[in-house]
Image (cartoon, rainbow, N blue to C red; front, top):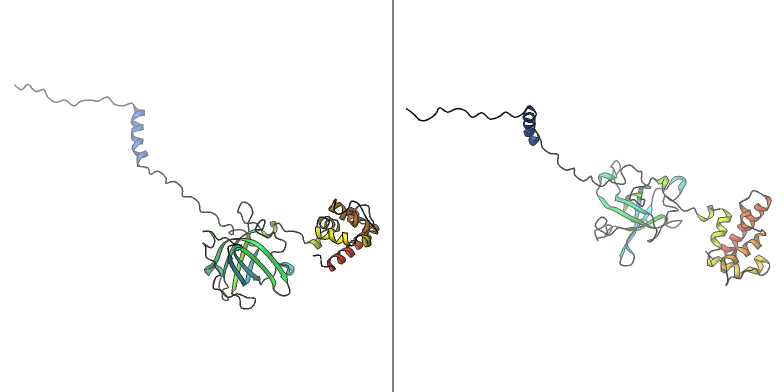
Length: 285
């Protein structure tokens, strides 16, 4: 007789229905691939949706690369702005406060070719150093180029190219003005300085009375302009001295009268215009 008992399957207690359902869901969770972390979005190009302040032809006039001035480039502007006005007229210039631009320069394409299809000579930031418009050179503009890794990487991009008003390389220039937050500004929103001759007579007088050259001019011609000495004297308070001489010459109690629409104001404005002609004729500016 066998002492072995017949084998009986071991019965394990069944889990509650809620646990069974949870167990079925668990493998499904594990099999689902977790989404990969999102890649960092590329930095937006400021020129994507905003029109440039200038897009047109340019002539390479000159370029320099010195320790003192940095990498600069001069362009002759070949396409005028509205009403024949220099497209960069009135913008801030200089290393300290010049208007910053996103600049793209390419070789001038043949007819029917999009400039964007040609390789860039330079793409990066540029600081507006100066602009000018005269009968000799026409409309010109100078940029200080970014010589860092996002700009020229230490090599002047225009080195070796022909320069000059006639012989200079023909180029296609696009320039977007940048705001303080690096975003491109629409041309309508770029701040421009009002030219001196477009300011009111009162504003002109306020500016010039703070100018040492104008004060010197008034001091040299005080007797003729004011009919005698005024107070205070130029060595004590030059700004008030200048204002006193101007008011005596205009024959008004306040320069603000020139803003009015009266006969007295019209006479004062004509006298101010005559004073300006005399001042500039003497070569003070």
